[in-house]
Image (cartoon, rainbow, N blue to C red; front, side, top):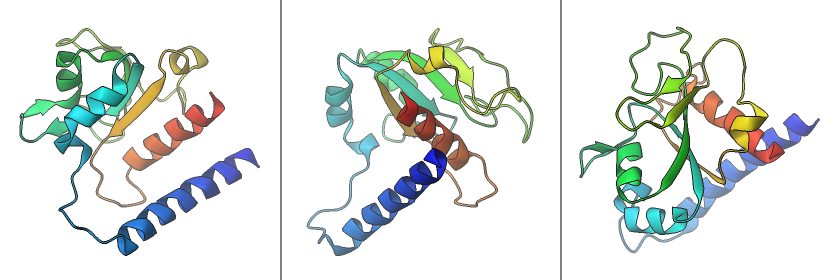
Length: 159
């Protein structure tokens, strides 16, 4: 029953966000979070941050991965949660990906697609205060990125 309620809440939230966008007059072009990194970093200062990101999490103007940009700004990234294809996008479709450590940054990577669990451990969930999700998705229901996000939202609701 809890899962049904969470799912209904998630769907209602998405609907409300789309309705607000539809009725809110836009005086200026919509700016994505990647275009307002000053706001994002200000909100994340002094927080322990978890990221759900993959190879699509690139800041276009800086041509750098979101993880690298946040670390450069002094944000305390505790863990990266990687969906299907892995953090850097090198795994084939359906391939199980082991948890590891990012070679470039030393940040622990917790695979959400290791074939053993459908959600992170309690220990992994306790390692962060804020979860930031940034992945491009094609919007098809059989793609796994939005399911990874949904499972993380469900786990966050429990913690």
